[in-house]
View 1 (cartoon, rainbow, N blue to C red):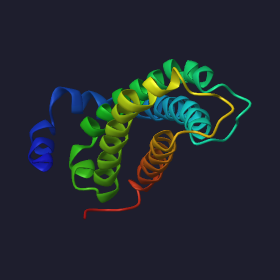
View 2 (view 1 turned 180 degrees about the vertical axis):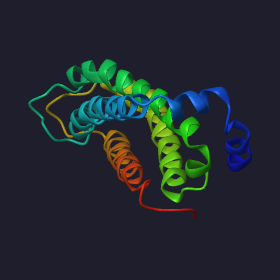
View 3 (view 1 turned 180 degrees about the horizontal axis):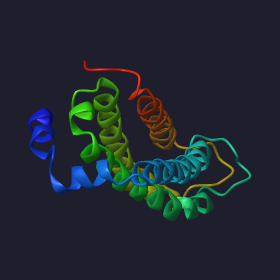
Length: 162
């Protein structure tokens, strides 16, 4: 399915623009890195606090970083789509890319669990008490999934098809 979509966009106008604009790919790489820094930088603080570390920080206060996390995710989503359009035949069969996308979906589902289960707990959460088990599970799942996304992203140039 992904391969057939990739074949359909090869030589399309967006694909050609990305390939034929000399400065675009490096600019996308830089933007993707900045997005990743915002995304992971914020999530590391939020998730480690939810997991029970950095108890000097109020858990609710760490969530003021969420706008930066969302901006970072938006930058990565936008540039990631453009990367795929720029080289769809390579990405569609790349095992690193495929695993990365599964991990992004897992991280998204984990974020929904956070929103539904952890956010309501924060209203009554004693910042000095141990973190609730659901918060720890969500935090460690997030850290694991996003670390996997980072690693698989770096592997894309070096691994081939599944």
